[in-house]
Amino acid sequence: MIGEIKFLKDYKEVQKVYEFVKKFPLDYPNFFVWLDKCKKQLETGDKKSFYATSNGQIIGSVIFQTERRESSVLEIKNFRVAEEHSRKGVGSALEIMVCSYAKFNSYNKIQIDTHQNNLTMIQFLIKKGYTIEAEEYLYLLDKPEVILVKKL
Image (cartoon, rainbow, N blue to C red; front, side, top):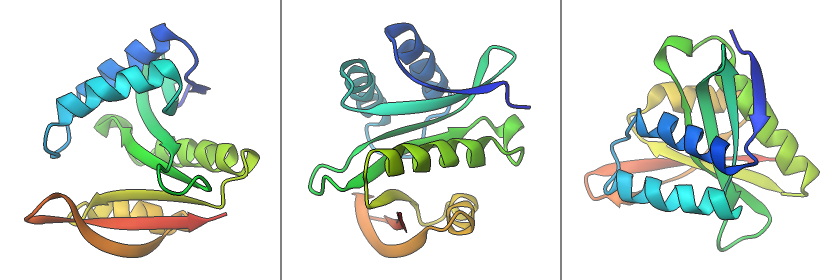
């Protein structure tokens, strides 16, 4: 059960989200190097985050930023829910918050990529109104990423 959804706003919260994401490493090259850089960008405000808690513990988070080449696009960089809390509305609540943030801040669309074999995430995003825009080899030469977008 979700306790609350919060917009990350201070150093203490950055540390908590960092520790949460660190517990669930993804199959991306140099993930921990990226995560350390991401932590610094969260501290400076270059990246933003919403996170969900239950009983005072983080159970899900979404990290996002303005897309570097197209300022009208909000790009989700990392989206995760602890396995024991999946399929309980945590991801949906986080996605709603990101959409609200994007609309309030006049973004035209939201973009996210995920491994081609991450069918659970792809199906989740399609149910939330995202469409597959492309498949590209962004991180690994043997593992294509599916790029999905949601127009606002």
